[in-house]
Image (cartoon, rainbow over all chains, first blue to last red; front, side, top):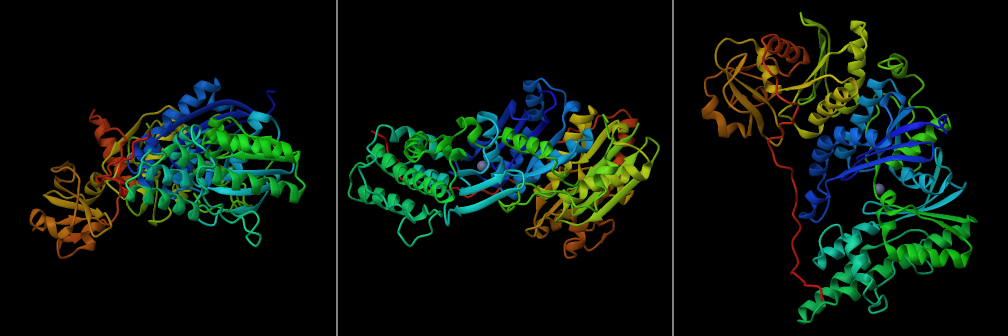
Length: 363
Length: 217
Ligand SMILES: [Zn+2]
């Protein structure tokens, strides 16, 4: 389908330098350079380390994506970039690169929302998003339930974490257990050999008077850490597999329970799960089980598309082009707290930026 | 030849075009908090003023700092990406060298810019074209002995009169000065350095307290 928009997307909201290329809903390239190893010894992402790595990795990652996709930059219909939310300094590197690239190539620029991109990426896996779509986004930076009737213009937050993100809880517990960073994959691995019912950890915000769609993982995190400390203080060995399994079960139980309830309440028959924690095998299994029981179709992209990447940004950018959404201006800035209700940052009508830049290189 | 020069290592967002003879258009705005927003529109304006399009540019010169990181990266990332899109060489020049060149002094002097946190980025020069020391970051009081009696330029010098009593203009670097310096060096057949950032400080990073090691069964 050569008439579908060919878009390059740039993502630098955290520690991954991602450059993806899509044509419509077809994935052509997904190049990622990660600085995760540089953060491991700190037990979390260090913003300045991430920003420095983005600057180094950007041009080689763009080159790799173009090569992988087998397309020429002059054939692109637009450049999309994560404008927010995320780490301010890290976002700025990607926004700066995208602006310079779009300007030099004479292409329209689309500053898009990171969370909407996490949802839109599923188009590359399972085709056009059903409208409306319910989305559960869970990662080290976010835990949200979102309802979207049009991913380019209408994303409504139903609930979000009131303290820690789900992925953050995984990282913290992994640190308490001395399992390294990031915590998600390693806890998932130990949990497979543990008993999820071994220890009854608390399920946050699940009382009858609690907000139905909000999450809280801070209490759980503290309870698990205390339980481990108590064992250590008593000179007993900590059963890492059982702790991992029981902690993980508490997290995914709450996530899936609330997501399925939101679908039922809103009459939505599709649930999409995205974000790094969507790679968790127990979350996928339990969501599948509960969705089936409730007659809901579950859509979860492959793990590599769930974590931060440029393809998801390109996917949303392509949708912006396809639906004729206005491009962003050349003074687009990174917005570390871009509201989830803004799927992209359209330019203002008064700007002449795109007129002057109309023909820079290939047009 | 058409050189595009830019620098975002100081509070100035500055852009200039040099055609091999002289600067033909330039722009400088001082706003330490909006490098990312201001740079590309400034480039667009400077090109329009010269009646040229970006694809006429044959080389790019970018100030590599030292400078506060967030702003510094805006210029470097823009230069790198233009280099990729246009297929032209990207050169780096020390931002302090640009200020030294603009100072147009014959004798020894010091260039100091504001490094924030009560420190300055600085270097000593024999004259406007000859740097004697590697750029460094220090507290003004700690280098008072090394800069004593010397004239000084740059916002870092103007900010600390106790250490730099003979401080004067220019306060900020201009891309016009960087472009002239680069054109002069290229015409003399000298290689310009790669566009790599001069951070001079390690990233701030809090290392979390470590728990006792637990060996999984
Ligand atoms: Zn994310």
